[in-house]
Length: 306
Image (cartoon, rainbow, N blue to C red; front, top):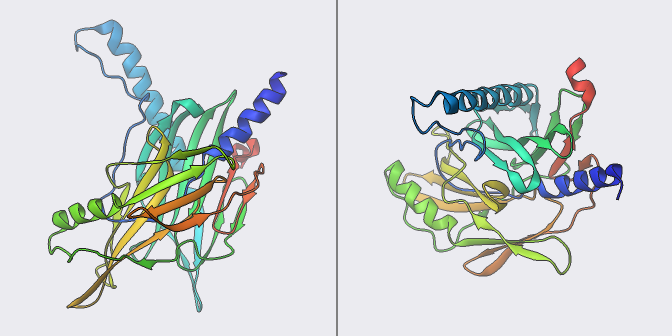
């Protein structure tokens, strides 16, 4: 096989792997360092080991600055029935990971909010397959349409809302304290399971990451609490995301809700208490993949010239 064909097939494999679906629940922002980013010296007196470790730490910091710059250069607007609202970027990545089987050297997840609620989640991934490049994958978490623009001139408009919240059956009475509610949300998340179909016959159970990726809420609205959990097929790379929210209409009336959104070209099946409650179809793979609720692309080499 020629190196060009190998690189093309690897790029297609990358794009298939890099997208996810989501469901939201409750938890504060959490950042995980990639498994291969920081290697600490076993002994402060071991100069030979400290020097390479220090070099890896500096490389990790430099990549984070690059990813931060790319996230800040991304603009997202929520399209409401009577107004357009600019999304506010959470200043730090809500999650950091790597994925060695897919040659993701380093990656971060970034979140944009409007009035305390996430409207979009974006991966910024640094690849080595076979050359280094930057990969973006964005999913709408908005209950209305959104539009997004990137530093290399890419533009995307969603065709339908990214999230359709559903009532959660059998939810617990909400705890009054935040820490206790987090325990409840983790229990709710464990009621869900997910499966991805790579082909019509190849399928894989996904693993729920034990801690929420991002926690949020808006005390000025009915959204009392919420969090995003991830499902994965490789390490800590979230190939799927889960959204559970606590809404309080009145002082004595509250309800748990959940939502899902696709972020992969693979077919998805999500179950609640072992009953299928949501599916997403296969998507046709493209170099620049723009779908109704999510999109992904490789950054143009001309972006650094802008």
